[in-house]
Image (tube, rainbow, N blue to C red):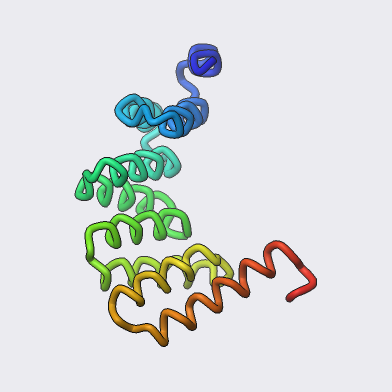
Length: 154
């Protein structure tokens, strides 16, 4: 089942990224990285492939490599909320909370309605002992999430 799209068009970077995501969900992280690398080889400017690789490397605790992958995704698409949040997550996982906060702030600057970035910012502020600011960030995250699921709350 995983091979069908992959072998139908071996030059299809999009299919490879989808396969990489599927492999990651199955816990086959090393294979997922190989597939993301294949997608990057086909199209080095495909930010989603770099991002997928960044997620897996973070899960594996390969933080320096994960940051490089997210930085490449940001270089390709500097307006990607996902890329900035992904980089923030790696920095958070490393305990680099001030740097993570800057990455989340950049994601929020790009899309102030992204509830996940606000929630991540709240988590980071909490780790920095800034509880009042964290609570404010969580409230914005919740408000944005409610707006996303119920347009009448706008």
